[in-house]
Length: 120
Image (cartoon, rainbow, N blue to C red; front, side, top):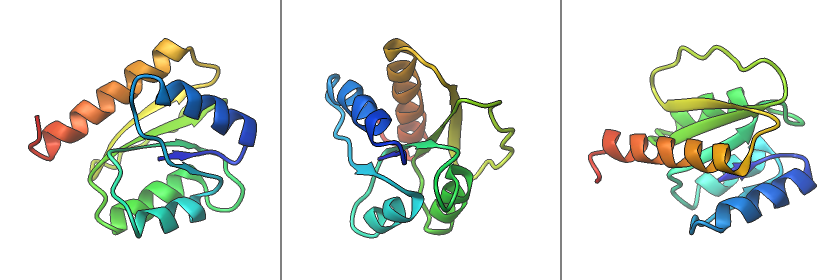
């Protein structure tokens, strides 16, 4: 799940992530993402921290309330947040980032989430 209120950034990131074989569902807001979670299960969420409406951090809290067990990557052009919540796997990715950095962090958090869930 890719959550970003900037359409150009969302499309570019989606294109990058789709190349190594990830299935990417896009949401323009945290509220849209929560709606998608009602119907589907996602291994990872890549969310901008600063979104119109609900923030990426607020989205993470809502997902935990919904018993989401995947990983969350917070993306920000500002100082990365200090998140002490251990109920979910998370990492921060500062903007700007390279394609390699993005792929590495997604691979890392997906692997960690799979291990936490007992999947290989």
